[in-house]
Image (cartoon, rainbow, N blue to C red; front, side):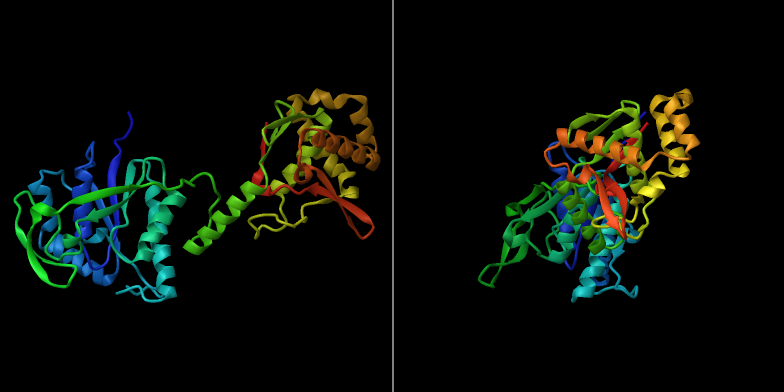
Length: 383
């Protein structure tokens, strides 16, 4: 039995706690209605004081739920997330670049964690707080949101927008003091107040990009790298069972011995990176192998292991050719070069732009090193 999906509302807010109740009200008026079961607010220290005072102490949130017979919402003082500066001190306002950076880190980190909860649907409102807070919330949902998550903005009749006396349209209309565009004040009935919910589309990047950064800036750098990498070249998929390589939706079949050599270089790039501090390979060739190393006994054993994985049985290694390789304690350089040439010819036949997937030779101090240019994060090897 599947767990019920819980609707969680996440708001950014500043000095106008009414955007929270307006959002809850507007969600309840959707068709079908969305009933919030849990509420979280990301704000400043000053914002927390106002939200606690109005929504909790004055009971305005409970008043809304009672008046419109809405289900209870889990919301306590602990549900209010206060943005801290780089030294861990609560921010009263967002005033400079460092404050902005801290805000981005808090919001994206919070959404990242919430989006990992499989039993929830996130409903995120950008109606309150600083514009940068709204930007960070929208960006976080793009990075980590799922198809069921939603992003909203609340639109309120201008006279009632940010009005300290207006938190939602009450069932029984009342006249409240409103500031007019010319600066004058006027008593207007809440009957004229309209609250609309704008459902904002956003790009879903989750599971399409690779992100390991902790800060917002690091996450964006990771996202840009992943997108650039995805545009620059397709993944390299090796299937030992099917004895083929898949690139750009093209399936390239290779003879088992050729596939074993190619898999050796791909596996080395993926698992034996000499620069683990680098997320992407770019121009690094630290995993390339000298021809003398390729011709040695250690590499022969690795190739034999791959060869057995291709066939699924070790008896294939008992033929005359493999026995000769063992007697000579390795495969000759000439045979290795011939095999590399055959592999490259086959790839060139199938791809319009094959360079990243060819076995590349790099001259170093009179010798040659061999490897693949394709990025290590784009390599998949399946038995």
